[in-house]
Every structure is written in C-alpha cells, then in structure tokens.
Amino acid sequence: MSFSELRSEMWALSLFGGRLAAAELILFSVFLTDIVMLGYMSELSLSAALLANSTFVLFYVTALGFLQGALPLATRHLERGDRSAYSGVILLSILQAAVIGLVIVATFIAYPPILRALGYPEDMIAESWAYIAWILPGYGLSVIYIALRNAVIATSSSQGFITLSLATLVLNAIFNYLLGFGFSIGDLTFTGMGISGIGLASSIIEVVLFTGFLALLQKSGFRLSDLGANNWQRIKAALQQIRESLVIGLPIGVVFFVNSTLFSGVLIMVGRHDIQGMAALALIFECAALLLMMPFGLSEAIVQRVSLFDALNRAARQRQIEIVTQASICVTFAYILLLAVIYFAAGINIPVLLLFDKSSHQDLIATLDALMILGFLVAALHTFVIIMASILRGLLDVNISMFVSLTCYWGVGLGLTFILVEIAGHGARFGLISVVIALAVSVVSITWRLWLLRSQPQST
Image 1 (cartoon, rainbow, N blue to C red):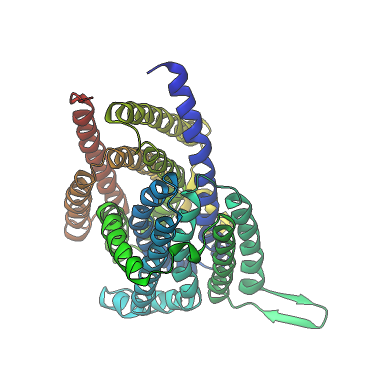
Image 2 (cartoon, rainbow, N blue to C red):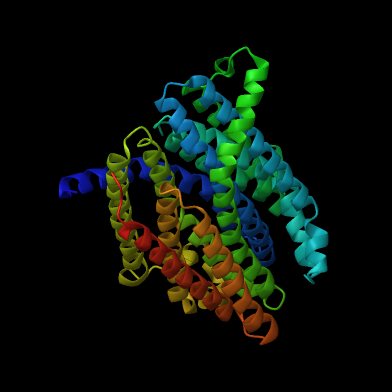
C-alpha cells in the first residue's frame, strides 16, 4: 500500500463521510435547538426535555444501526444494475423503520407511568409530558427518514443533504422561538406555549424533513415500478432480502442499542438522586452524541465503500479493505486530535455552549467544568469504538462487536454505575467515570480483535 493510495482513500472517506456527517450533525442539532431554547425558560424545563431526548437518542441510534443493514445490500444491487432488488431492499427498510417508529410512539405514551414507577417527582413528570405530547410525531418520523436517507447514500450521492439540513435547522430555530415564547404583530398576539411550543416546532420541522427526503429519494431514481409485475416473485425476493438485511442489521442494531442504554441507564440512576447532576450528564451525553455524528457519517461511508469491493477477487478485495482500514484509523486520530485541541488548547467545554443563558445556570456550569476531562474522554473513546466496529463490519465480523458491547456497556458500565451510584450513594461524577471505564475496556477489546484479524494470513 503506497502513501498516495492511503492519502487518496483518506480524502475519499473524509469527503463522502464528511458530507454525511455534516448533514447528520445538522439534523441532530434540530433537537439541540430545543435544549438551547429551553435553557431560557427554567432548569426544570431543560431537565425534562434532556431526559426525554436522551431516551429518544437510544431509539434513534439503535434505528441508525439496525437500518444500516440495508445500506450494503442496496449498494451491491446498484453496482450490479439490479434496480428491482435495490427498490425492494429500500421499500422493506422503510417498512422496518415505520415499525420502529410505532414502537417509539408506544414507548413515549407510557413514559409518565414509567417515570412515576422510577420515583421521579411529579413536576418533572408533568413537564416531560408537556414536551413529549407535542414532539411525539416528530420522534416517529425522524426514524423513518433514516431509511430514506440510506437509499440515497447507496447511490454514492449526498447532494442535497446539507442544503435540506441547514434549511430545516434555521426553520426550527424560528418556529421554536415563535411557538415557545410567542410573538406580537400589530393587533395580533400569540401567547407562547412554553415547552409544549418547543416540542410542536420540532414536530413541524420533522414533517418538513420527511418531505424533503422523499423528494431526494425520488430524485435519486427510486421507483416502485422497478419492483416488477410478478407479485409472487416480489414476495419471495422480499423475504430473502429481509433475512439478508437482518443478518447485517440486527447485530449492528443490538450494538447501537446497548451503547445507548449505557447512557440512558446512567442518567436514570443518577436522576433518581440528583436532578442537577443528571442535567449535567445529559448535556455531556447530548454533546457526545453531537460529536459522534462525524464517526457515524464516516462509518456509513466505510460500509458503503467496502460494499463496492464485493465484485473483486479475494486478494484484491482484501487489499482494498486494508487501505480503507488504514485510512479510517488515520482520519479517526485526526478527529480526536481536533477534539483535544478544542477542549484543552482552546479551553472550550462544548456542553457549556448549549447554555446561552449562563447567568441562570451557574451551578450547572460549575458542575460541567468539573467534569470536562471526563466529558472529552466519553466523546474520544466512543469515536474510536464506532470506527473500529465499522471496520469489523466491513470484515463481516459483526458478532464480536455485539458481544463486546453487552459485556462492556451493560456488565462494566451499568454494573459499576449501580454499585457506585445506587448502592454506595456517590454522585454524577462516579456515574460518568463508570461510562469512561466501560468505553476504555471496549476500545481495548475491539482493537485487540481487529489486530487479530489483520494479523491472520490471507489466502489469495
């Protein structure tokens, strides 16, 4: 492998993955806009929305992984010129996303009694429901357009993603302000709906996004008519494609679900004893999720590019995968270095930036500053885990990532949090330390597995 090949692959991954990451970052910022606006209302409203969104992130990230199973299949069918199979995979992926969306809606309808059973105060439960009741349609739609976006990514095109994402981000900020705080024009006065208005604004924006992704899918050439006229053949092909997508997508979805439950579980345990500590951790995890959009975008680019090598012979395919692996590691280290510069050289504690009304949250800011190093480690270690796991997926080794996630995140992370927070009575800091330890063990385990695979002699 020459340096020019490595540099070329790094550029290709950064360009394609960067556009995907930028679009994903902007889309995720739609929910962060809610947090920024709620920071002007009250700490109770802020904590309630953070708690709801942290639960939603669990479902969103899980769906992101589960639905990724359709991406390599769709890419492979397009490379072979099989438009019928491509359309079948995409249609099934959309139906799977719709089912996940219904599960999300059902879960959040049951959210108040769940919080009540966990011992949360009634004012927190009421404020959370005031937000959830209006943002719930947006939660459901946001999962469905993951499948629409994957269909466009499979065509090796990301044009229109950033434009659509930026437009909706600006619109969301405008609607958040108008519906949340109210406005007056001449004799017309609209009284702001508070936290409910913030939730309604986000649902409106999710409808706009859903419509926009449908338009991008239509523009990419997707047509239901490509499925063909033979219904029985379509049914058999659909069943086969479901099986193929589940073989890839199910382990990825489990990995992403386990990853997300680590953060949600820690928040729930800390929130039972310390609402302000929970708010601090929720801000750190929200920012970590925001910063992880870059490795998520890069991982999607890795999966898509590895799928392009399917037609090569074993030796050529292995060589291309090795180049992608080296390029991915280099890009990952560059990104982690950039985060270190922002946190430590520039002295910017990114979660604090979400609190625009800093004068009203001095105690919360002091807590965030005390946890800055741990917050950086969460983002940096999780970035490395995501990229290493995506390389393993490219090598068709998905089960080890699932095993590592179950062991490290549930066994180590949630286990330590239960001991240190619930039993020993320590605060939010020890919950965050538990997360960092779990991520560190995961990094060591996945890196060791990747080293073993790459050190095995390859047949030609």
